[in-house]
Structures are given as C-alpha cells and as structure tokens.
Length: 587
Ligand SMILES: Nc1ncnc2c1ncn2[C@@H]1O[C@H](COP(=O)(O)OP(=O)(O)OP(=O)(O)O)[C@@H](O)[C@H]1O
Image (cartoon, rainbow, N blue to C red; front, side, top):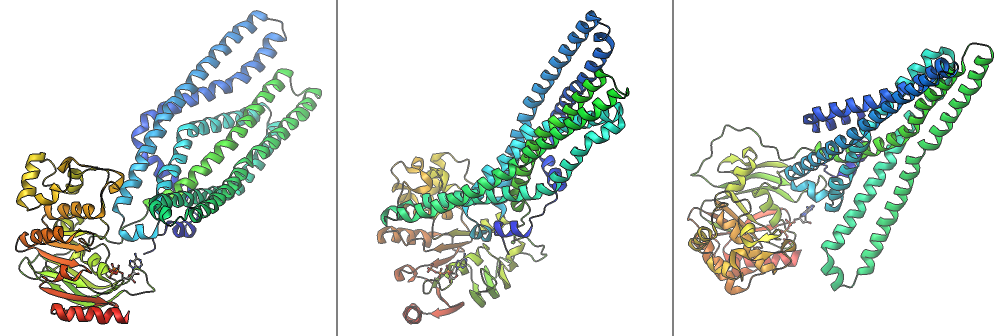
C-alpha cells in the first residue's frame, strides 16, 4: 500500500474547500457558544460601522445644511458611542476566537498524533520523521492562525461588504451597479488565482517538511557524522534543502502578495467611478452632496475591507494548503485491519502456523516465497541465515507488523488478522534488533505497555522481577528501577538497552517470545544469565531466537535456515552450521 504522503499529495491535489471546512468545524463543534458570541460581536461591530456613513449623510443633509449645530453635536455623541461599542465588540471577538483557535490546534494535533499511532510500520518506512513533525507542528499552526486571527474578521468583512453593497444599490441603482463592477472583476481574479496560490503554499510547506526531515536525520546520526568527519556532506545536503525551502517560500510569498496590488487598483477604480458618476448626478440634479458623501463612505466600506480580504483570503489559502497536508494523514487507514472470524482459539495445537505465506515490502520484489512451518508450544526455535536472508521479515510476520501478500499466518489456530492489537501483543513479545527506549526511568521503560504491573510499588515490582529471575539484570543499573534514561537511551550502552528490552518483554509473560539479535551486544556471561532466564520461562512459552552467534542457538529444539525467500528446517545444529557456511559462500 502506498503510504508516501508526498505521493498521495500529488495524486489528490484537489480537495473540496467546503469538505475541508466542514471537517475543521467538526473539531470546534463544542465551541458553538463561543463561536455564536464571537459572531454576535462581529455582526455588532460590522452593523454599527455600516450605520455610520448613513448617519453622516443624514446629518449633512438635515442639520449641517440648515446650520442646526446642536443636532450635529447630538449625532456626533451618538456616533462616538456607536464606535466605542463597535471597538469593544471587536476586542471581545478577537479574544474569544484566540482561545477557540488554540483549542482547535490542540485537538488537531491530538487527532494527527492518535492517527499516527494507529498507522502500520509500512507508513513509517515510507515517510520521514522530520516531515511528519513538520506536519504536526507547522502545518496545523497555519490552520490555527487562520481560525484564531482571521475567521471572524473574514465573516465581518463579508458582512460589511454585503451591507455596503446593499446600501450602494439602494441609494442609486445605476451608480451602485457601476461601482460594484470592479468588485466583480476582483471576484473573478480571486477565483482563478486561488488554486495557484494554494499550490505554491503547499509546495513551500512540503519543502519545509523536507528541511525538517534533513535536520532530523543529521541530528539523529550525529555520531556517525562526527566519527566520519562528514559534516560537510550533511551541511551540503542541508544547504540544498534550505535553498529549496527558501526559493519555494519566496515563490509562495510572491503569490500571497499578488492580491494586495490588484485589489488596491480595483478599489481605486471604484472610487473614480463614484466620483465622476456621482458629480455628474449632482450636476444633473439627481443627487445631493450628503448622499454623495454617504455614497463615497459606503464605496470605501465596500472596497477597503477588500484590501483586508486580500490578506485574509491568502491566509485562508495557506490554511487550506496546510489542511490538505494534514488530511492526507487523517484519511489514511491501516493496511492491517482486524477481520471478523468465528474460529475459536485452539490452545492445544501449534501456537503459530505459516500457511503458504508469501511476502514482499513492495510489489516489485518478493522477499518470502510460499513459506510453510509450524511452531509448537513450549519449544525453542532458532532462525539462522545470511544477512538480508529474511529472518527479521519472518519474525515481523509472526508479530503481524505486516500481513502476507499471499497465504495466512495463524496464531493458536486462528487467523492472526482476527486478533485485536492488544490481544495479539499480549500473546506475542518481540524484542527488536534496535530496542526502543524513551526518556524516563528504567521502571517506566520496563513497564511500557504492561497493564498488569503498572500500579505496582517499586518493592512489589522488585519482588516480581526477583521471582522472574531478572534481579541480576536489574542490578547492572546503578540506581535500579530509578535509574534515569535520557535522550531515548543515549545515556546507556546498547547492551544495557537490550537488557531493559529483555526485562520488558519477559515481564509481560507472552506465550510466544521473539528475540531478534536481542543478545548481540551482551557479554557472554550476561548472555548465559539471559539463557537461564529463558529456560526458566513457563514451560508452555515458545521462543523464537534470531542470532548470528552460534552458541546462542545451540540449545534450540529446532533450527530454521532462512535464505533467499525460503525458510527450511535445518535439522541438527551441525547441519545448520554447514548450511550457514554454504549459504554465506553462495550469497
Ligand atoms: N522496510 C523494508 N523495505 C524494503 N525492503 C526491506 C525492508 N526491510 C528489509 N528489506 C529487505 O528484505 C530482505 C530481508 O531483510 P531482513 O531484514 O528480513 O533480513 P535478515 O535476515 O533479518 O538480515 P540481518 O541478518 O541483517 O538482520 C533484504 O533484502 C532487505 O533489503
């Protein structure tokens, strides 16, 4: 399945703006009250501002022309009060919407992160961490900026413009139509220019994602960079990504600014029309000066917000481009769905069976061909074979990190696809080649994903560790369970990381335990301790051990030789060694 977000983006450039808005508004559906209050505030502000010119025109024609200055003063006071109320309403609106925007951002980031947690290994194989971080952080913030700062302004602007348009047409229809023609031209320009602006912004965000991926990769590999003294290599790569980001940001900036001069020009044109046509109407006795002043103010009320709308519309296009990049993630479904099955678990037969299983990471290359084998309860299996032969791939299929392309994997006689993820991970423990630790204490890392012991006190946990025979491993850590692990495990050795991963897996007491090169970095004495612990696991536990070190697999009940897409029973240990040597010579 194609999970490459940049490919998906190219294939689905067009997403409906209406649908995007609907989904975004879903995120703030609990904010109805705040949205309503903000809407009332913005309507009050726009309404009061719209009334202003009308009152001014009325005051000129009724009071100023007749030199009634007391009336002028009274209306000036009313106007002042209206403008104060309008300003307060505008302040309340922006204050309320700031919170709404932040809560939307909070929920949006939460839903992206939750989705990321549900996606399969395939997704992470095909996308760079830096790009994903950029989507979660930067792109979602673009949406927040629009919603918190611009949405209500946007609505307010539209209301003001519509009101001003109505006044313009009502005061004098012909003059109104002539004044609004530049507005129509602006509308057409906006319609055609918007997709181009959105595309340029999408490209700029993609390049920011690329830059973030570049930073992430070089920070992650800093030891190799320093050891090989290849700072210049990464610096060049970074410069290139930075240059691309810069160029696309400039292009997006140019696109984003294109509305402002165009809107400005048409707004000027409209003023010109009002003045010339209006003066002509006065000269022919069809119009009063007061009406022309009101009219000019309404034309300004129509075209001035247009300049503002230019910036808001650009912000909207930027937010929509950000939303597209985020929605590609939110729309993804896992390619490892749980399927329905009426079959009951059979706890007496084989724990695992591969039935004619074929698998490839992509369509072009099959890695495993028609594999058949069974793993019996309580036995220890070893997978050996040359580098790249397919051992980790086989183990990954046992743990359902991937589904076979053909054939079926059965756990306790039941299609492994019919288990809920937590049911499956309760039954299968997987110690990966590269153990995953996070910043925290040894205790937190050992109890990762362990519901049974998570509320144990340190004393209770230590007693459990002791009875599982793991005490000598814990003793290796100076402060025991409270030893701090920093920077995702950078503060301890690889072997120590493997020990924590080992304790984590053993304490969950799985029925099937897979160790993928799990002892490769551990000294022979500690390895012997691990071996003893493995031997002391409940009798029914099945162990699958992948190892290059031959002494690790010496005690296996059965050895499989994995090479060139085949998993073959190797028979005795000596025969396996022979196959290994032979296989290695061939590869
Ligand atoms: N994520 C992936 N995407 C594409 N191909 C992959 C991926 N992971 C592994 N492969 C390919 O699948 C084949 C089997 O790899 P696998 O990791 O299963 O080998 P292995 O026997 O475990 O090797 P090692 O002893 O080095 O750990 C190799 O050709 C490898 O290049």
